[in-house]
Image (tube, rainbow, N blue to C red; front, top):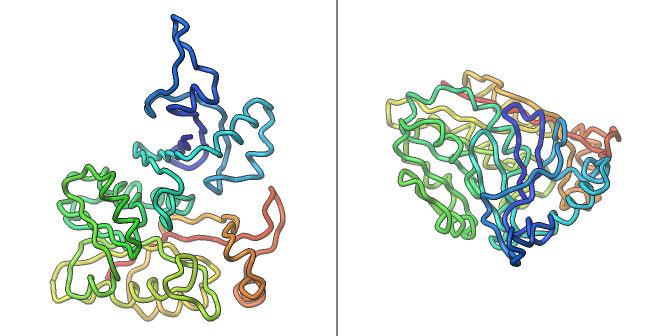
Length: 309
């Protein structure tokens, strides 16, 4: 199954790909009536198009596809293990369940890429994506510039490194496993990008990928603390649910701050929605927006910010 998004995130095209063509789309015979069991993932067929996507898999929109066959086909494709995400020329294949704890790109990843799509990378020689998971953002930036000589992806999950080892084809790229805060202490990168945990939680567990803000806070406070004379830029994703915590830290950083993009998205994280204490905290103390429409009750606004000294 492939999700292809246009550059402005105005449309989301859904395709059947590879073996799904014979298993789901009825293309199980060739011109000589010989059975076909599998096609390469490069072969695909459009199933449907959704407008104004705000999630990678928006259940409400998918269940409300008007065409019956397209609607049923999408439901069948969602059960398949292979997901391909394509945005602005970059494709990432991701087999669900193979790399535990590593999430395929979501809408916040693509919002991040939309925000940085027109930046000038001519002065960027080195880049690190902190908390990279499969590394979509680093790969996207790398696809935009041949000037970049060093691309580092970093995560604490060893399965993210396994994904990198299994899929990387860029000789400029390397993966560093472990805590980025220790790795960055005496390193210089021209550009640091991070789509961090951005949903605050009381009594947070720091290594939970959905919660708390320690990594975000650290990067804002330390992104330009280096003995190297060269300038470092930091690009991050911030939720309005953390504004009361993050905004004062941004002000104290004395950084030049540019908002590159923003989007209001539904809150669709099971670990959050099914935790009454967490939800009560977000609704009553962090302005989680309770506004049911288009199949979703709770929403947050994400902002892509670029920090420079």
